Image 1 (cartoon, rainbow over the protein chains, first blue to last red):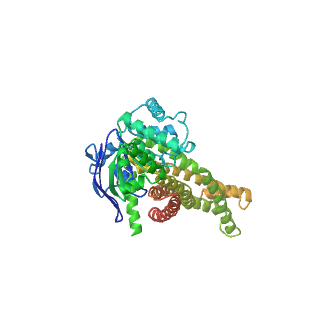
Image 2 (cartoon, chains in turn green, brown):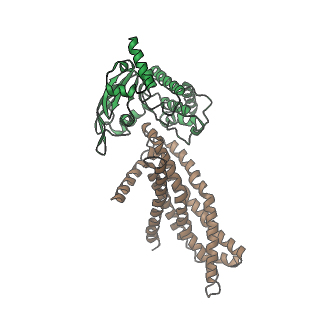
Image 3 (spheres, rainbow over the protein chains, first blue to last red):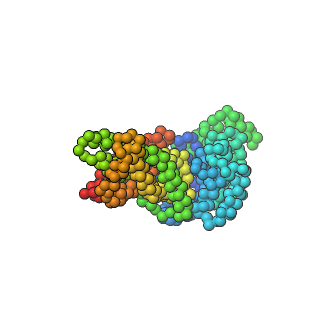
Length: 254
Length: 246
């Protein structure tokens, strides 16, 4: 469980996040949604420690991440996996070396054990026969899956996804969404997904926070989103005719 | 103020670079890889430049002295001194600032804009240490050997010019390069090389590490890396020469 309490962040006097309070629950897909520039990525970066918030706390199972000494923070970081928008795979390393990297740095496994773990992680994300390829030699969807394999290599307690579906076709997006949901439920991970993909919201939204212009505008899940009367949320989620019709039909069914 | 800001930021960066490594074995492996990239990868350009510069220095000196009262063996002496004192340590360092410096800055800069450095940080790895420390150590270890090879090839280039152009009898050139040899000049050159190697790698890495933006900024960072590491080399060259030779 990750609790965000009163989080506030400014850049050069411009408020990007203001008084965010939210609990990201264990074993659930927690979604952060909002328009581009609403502050989603800044929230994620504050949570993982890439940005220092100006005010507020981020508690990882009760441990105040930003208040703890650097040594303890490093220990918490070992429990965190992150999948970046572009994958952020190391260009100079093969797929196998990328997935093996956190194991090499932080585990005491033998080389055979590491290879076994890498193969397990790659198989878990449905990738085979790519071990010796470089990131430049695989597709965007495969890169995302390799990044997920790298993120789960050390059995993390928390995984952050920054727009996991960006740049992917709808079919591949669904595959990635399913994979994230499966991993979250299978290993009981606290998953935080930053997205503006409405399919993902409807498919995986077990616990959602909607950020509008840096403010926490709405919280709920994929069921309650349909019934919400929040104008900003509706304008964002049901912007397309397709989603408007879908909402209409869901409301009529109820 | 801007210079002071960057100086301060550079020294803070160095404290991160020399922080405790997470896994020494991994750093050692990276250092060996960097020795190959930085040292052996630079050998062809260093060899070509050294041979031709040695040859040109010999021809220029010989043409200036021909017909005069100064003995022609002075050509060998002048070529040796030029190569040992200045060409091999300093001019080769400036060439390496262009080749190695831009490579380091663009490599680290690209890692920054593609969030690979953020990925390292989130894993709990000291990204500055992991990426930069092996490069600095590799350059400091291998560059003296590169410069020694450059010295030999420069002097050999001078002999080759004497032999092929006929401007000077090769045996006279050989006599010249043995005149008034001061071994400390080699030590002085190698001391300079150590400082230059540190400056090239650390200044370039600094400019790559703090790139902010996209491809355009990576290019700008790479250019700044070459310009500032060259300036630092020239300043260090003056300071070290004054300290060691006077």
